[in-house]
Image (tube, rainbow, N blue to C red; front, top):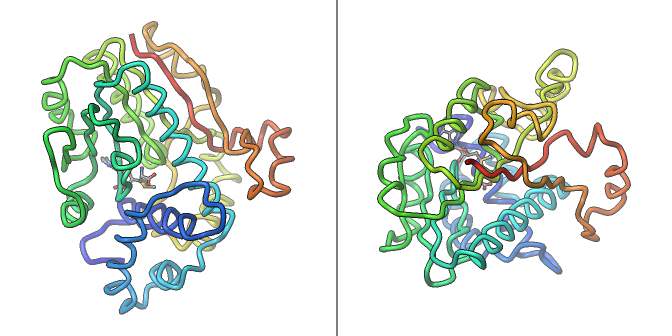
Length: 282
Ligand SMILES: C[S@@+](CC[C@H](N)C(=O)[O-])C[C@H]1O[C@@H](n2cnc3c(N)ncnc32)[C@H](O)[C@@H]1O
């Protein structure tokens, strides 16, 4: 991995390369030309590395199932953003833990105000590929340092917060205080976030998860899952203003590329391993 990039920040390279591989595949689920541009440039540096993950990224040999899952997820989050913009064309979207993703380019309707927020080391790379404009902004900060909220509060909203592949890397108490702070500061906003089933955070399932993340996906030791919930409605218990709207799992998709995995949607335990929840924060 590039110098100065921590294990958790490094996970954004995996999703970026998934987007690029899917974009270049037949009948792509996601069309993301910017990911192809960025990975082509990053390959020049990563190809000099001995790191096993870097070798997989550069050689284009990421697990095909992972590529399909990540592409389906990105497409679904694009759909959530576009649905929001159909209702509120000049709404404000905050992409928490944006990584090197280019959602703004994929969903820009000419009016949206879009904030990409990630750790400083990721935003430093992002700045070399994206130009900020009056409607597209980069915030280099941990999402847990709530000062970023003052910048976003300069707008009147409405607001959509997205956290795609992020909350599971944070401690549970931090996710809870973040959601409650957004709810307090941005009344009436929507939150779309990916969650992990908390049963995977305890022995013995945690061991299986760590094996998958570290041995199969070659992620660094710190890039492990730290938080989760048992059910989409669990967050409603954190505050009476939090209202569950809908949920989505990869397996809900009719996508051909899921192949036989589609049958797994009938097994609740699998369908709800890692899924996305949509909330109203009042
Ligand atoms: C798996 S990547 C997902 C990136 C992007 N959302 C996507 O789907 O392509 C997780 C991202 O969360 C970011 N992240 C983790 N902890 C964070 C924090 N405390 N504050 C801001 N970003 C964070 C990481 O830097 C990384 O870019």
